[in-house]
Structure formats: C-alpha cells, structure tokens
Image 1 (cartoon, rainbow, N blue to C red):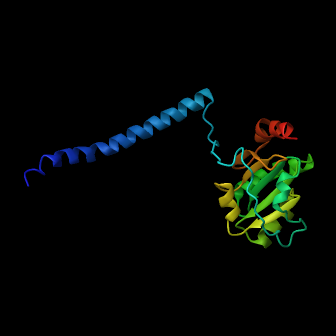
Image 2: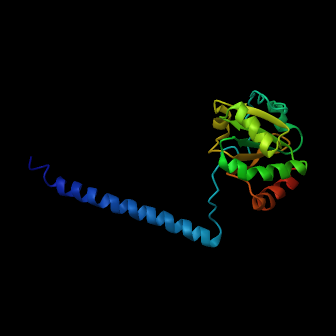
Image 3: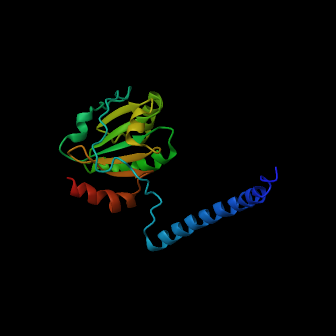
Length: 192
C-alpha cells in the first residue's frame, strides 16, 4: 500500500491542474480568433467542406409535391453552366432572411435548384407562395440523406456547382447582399 501513496499527490495535483490547462487552451484559442479577426484572416463562416473541388453528390430525390416546379435529376448539376444548390426549409427563420437574395439571383437569370430539407410539403408550398419561388428545380430531402452526402451543417446552406458538376463554393447560413457581391458574383462570372 505504501507504493501507491506517493502517486496520490501526483494524481491530485494533475486533477487540480487539468481545469487550469483547459482554461489556458481555451484562452489561447480565443486570443488566436481575436488576432485573426483583427488581421482579417478569421472567417466565422469559414466552415470547411470536403466537397470543394470534387463532384457534387449525384442523388435522385423526389419532386416537392403540391408545387408547380419540377424536380431535377443528378444530371442537372453538370449541365454546362453554373448552378446553385440551396438547402432550405419552411421552418427555418434564416431561410426567410435569405429568400430575397434567392429571388434577386433568379431575376438575374442564375439557375437555382432547391432541396427542401426535412420539411412537410404543405408548409414548404405555403412558404413559396408567401415569399416567391426562385427555383427552376425543386426536390425533397425528407430523410436528410442528401444533407449527409453534402456535409450539411444546417439550413440554409448553398453550393455553387460549375458546369462540369464540380462544387466550387459553399455558404453556410443565409446569404446577404454583401455575400452576393463579395463572394458569389465573382465566382458566377468565373464559372459562367
């Protein structure tokens, strides 16, 4: 028993120092974030995506019932011109904030394909009647399988797919006018 006693003070000391170590690591991470914000290298929306530079997932999903917009097949993602794939839902408050930007993109002739995520068809239809329908193709991801394949963090989330079906850009969260002008417009010009 005497052999175990010298290690007890070390174990106690380690237990007492563990919270201090965690606090120091958290403080270091926070300092790095503040430093990045100051020099512009930290992007709070910079959620990594394994899809960038890779082919978009080719999923066949059913069309949204009760809406006059047709569904789309995976081939629509490699149709020769850029397309935006937008994951949205009627229950999503940020989707309401983003919707005017989608309508503006549609008015400019940008092709938008919508993926209604884990939603009910009647509510999704009412959302589009109330706010407008910017989508040229609209499918339902009731089970969330497409969300898993795309690496979805939440809705809204938008992917720019070039004419060859390669994912070139991802935006997690609602797009704003600033997002369109600073991020998306240059990419649409480059991949047109």
